[in-house]
Image (cartoon, rainbow over all chains, first blue to last red; front, side, top):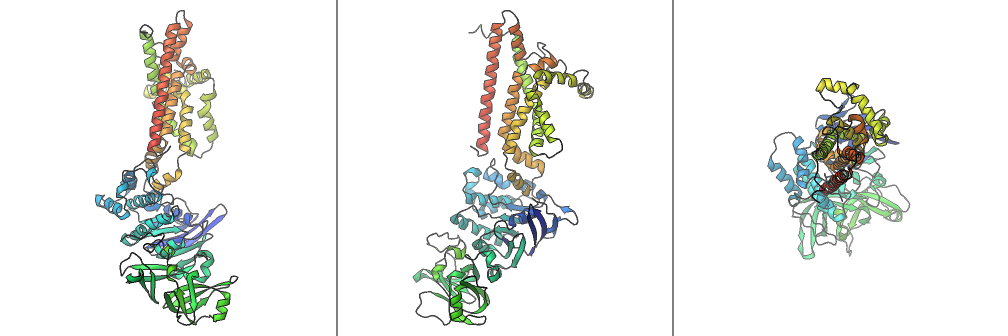
Amino acid sequence: MIEVAIEHRLGGFRLAVEFHSTGGLTALFGRSGAGKTSVVNAIAGLIRPERGRIVIDGAVLTDTERRVFVPAHRRRVGYVFQEGRLFPHLTVWRNLLYGRRFALGPRSPAEVDQVVELLGIGDLLTRRPANLSGGEKQRVAIGRALLARPRLLVMDEPLASLDEGRKGEIMPYIERLRDETKIPIVYVSHSIPEVARLANTLVVLSEGTVAAIGAPAEIMGRLDLFPLTGRAEAGAILNTVVAGDDARFGLTVLRAAAGELRVPRLDLSAGAALRVRIRARDVMIALAPPEGLSALNVLPGTVAEVGRADGPIVEIRLDCAGEPLIARLTRRSVETLGLAPGRRVYAVIKSIAFDHHAFAGAAPAGGADADAIPG
Amino acid sequence: MHWFFDFTPDELTAIRLSLWVASWAMVCSLPFGLGAAMLLARGRFWGKSLFNVVVHLPLVLPPVVTGYVLLLLFGRRGPLGRLLEHTIGLVFAFRWTGAALASAVMGFPLMVRAIRLSLDSVDRRLEDAAATLGASAPWVFVTVTLPLILPGVVAGMILSFARSLGEFGATITFVSNIPGETQTLPTAIYVQTQVPGGDLPALRLTLVAVAISMVALFASEAMARRAARQTGGP
């Protein structure tokens, strides 16, 4: 359980952020300058907010009213920084063990082995940070934070300094961290694909305040938040399960609540859960089940909301068996088709729309920029 | 050549004493140098610029003046000299300890400058990272800051050592020129140049001084390179 309520002034910038979250991975999303890093710095005790209260799993770390401010080194908040911040004078091994001498409880060698295995850094242990790639540095930084036995892990844009390929390399490790350890994570990002794939709870920050909070699928489906989440990247999230392979055509079948999706083959076994982000610009609308069309994916649904027009473009939100889907159309099409809430329609999605953006790194196998996740 | 380097016992004593005095000056001023550098690089307190001036004063004052001030403060009748003699039995006046103190004071600004420069170049964010891993402020200093500024500390120590070897004015003013007690290389050379037939001894002592200084500088270069390699720098 994470409770954050802080007010702070930095120069002319006012930060007034309040949110609760129940563990898992909480993503703080917003443009640069929205105050994301200040929030995690306050959680880690690197800045002292003027007013506020921060409680992690019952432990009060900051409470200005009761004059509580636990210093950073006693908070047990692991911090993975954007630039890694590995100690340049220590080997990877010594970096990993740095926080352990301060950690509580018995020291088991198995714990180190586990973390080294979890992050796949066994081959790097004798090297120095100067000789590591960006992705390797970030994995070591995550391991170093984990071995200090944190009660909470905060990650400040840990992937921002990496190229697309390296992002795809790290993200599976963060997913494993989220799913296999019990440590709650607060994850700062300004990337829609990242938060869509990783977050359990999404907190949207804008100009120092919380603009929205909720499950990623719900937030991404809200038309009114598009100015904040970014129109070009806007899209909805469908929760799907891998149903099997269509081996003959090199496709994977995913099952969503509204129906089946056929996408370029993924290296995932049947039954695996997968979040698919479908960008609004990749969705077309038909009034009747289309025939003689090359697109493979057609999901029935009803129009739930027609967004505010911004020039010639309008976004509409569909309800596809309880899950939202966003489509971007011209105002003209909306008028000609007579789209209004309650209208039954068919959403058409081309299979090749499912590139690495859709899976945030878990790209189609054999694709041009494939970064298949292991396992 | 053999006859040329045939040192008299007095000359050997002066060489040994010089190395001894310079080593003590270097080692004893290190903790103070680190502290002053930390205060100047990180501290925020009233009178910081005055403190900065006082630390650098020996660099610009005539050494004779520094020596005289030391005599007033640390002489037998000086307030600090009397205090130290009564509390811990430490006497500076006309002892080699006084020569070490004079050398340390003269080398102090150089040491502080070198350490402060390297402190300014330390990435403070690494210290924050150490704190989030559970390290308290003293631990952060010992395990992160100190290793990172090691090249600067070594450079500062060598500068202080080299300055001590060359110290003349403050030493001779403060503790005079007593063979076997306060007569270091520079004063020994000076004495030789003042007596008839002293040219040869003066020249060989000069060569010794040059040799020691060069070894010290080479050692500092090598150690700085090694430290830089360890921290992954250039």
